[in-house]
Length: 164
Image (cartoon, rainbow, N blue to C red; front, side):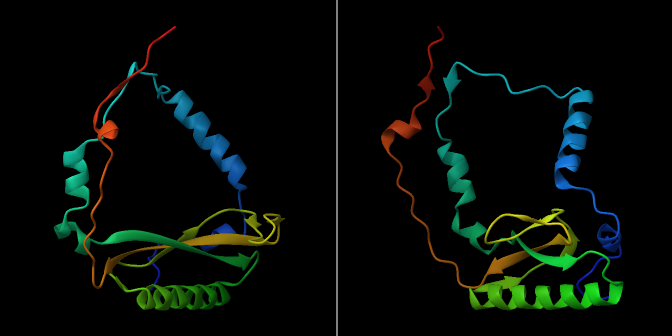
């Protein structure tokens, strides 16, 4: 197997694609039948949690790996060898771009099926003969810079909403 792919890379998605809209409906029906409930509206909108923000943006976390995602398209009915060559090229270009932006690869690169049909990037029109694939990996920032966030005082107080 190649160095970019896990053993569970789904190349069969090129042979029998399921439209993304159908997949979303199937998953929504599964959630609805599993007993998950909708969000309940509250009377109070909580204030920002400053301690959580400090934990999230602390300088120690600047070197933590962060997940990123990229996409590429392949025509349907493509052979596995051609698919792997196309995927290797897309992954290599993506890693080069991320490296030029100051990010270093920190995890295994995974390729998984994405949207079918793949949308045209300029017009948004679905391309029925192509499937989109997603590339995911984690990267670390080579030279992180400090971040300072100033919040207005009103954001630190809860907002109460009156019910009619």
